[in-house]
Each structure stands twice: as structure tokens, then as C-alpha cells.
Image (tube, rainbow, N blue to C red):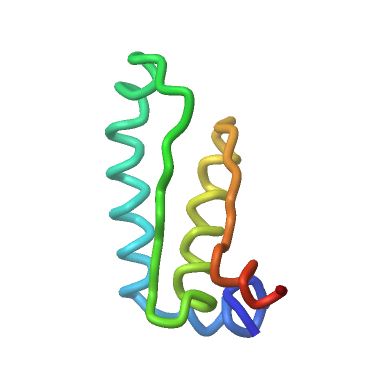
Length: 87
């Protein structure tokens, strides 16, 4: 199972530290995105990592992607470690 699976997401969702990390990362990005857009940046790469690369980082990246998509941002998410596991 990975951070894309409901049981893993439910487990992580119960941890205050996870919510704090998402909130703080989201706040940081919200602060800087307008300036980056004003300076005509065509993209921004945000990388989230964890020890195994399939639970916390995947869940957090998806939460951030969903948040910014819901606000009209063009977001692409890619989970490098999960891609490697498919090969």
C-alpha cells in the first residue's frame, strides 16, 4: 500500500504533525507563488521526500496538489519512487 490508498491516508490524517507539515508547506507556497507568477516563472518544482518514498511523501504531495488544483493552479504530481516500483 502507498499514500494513495485510503487506509494509509486515514492513518496519516490522524497525525497532527502531518497536518502541520502540510499547512506550513502550503502557507510557504501561497506566500511565494504570486511573486513567481509575476516574474513569469513557467513552473515550480516542489519535492517531498520520506524514508521509503511511498507513504508520507506520496500522501503529502497529493494533499498539496489537490489543494492547489482546487484553487485553479495547473498541478502535476509525480511519485518517482512509485514509478520505480512499477518497472
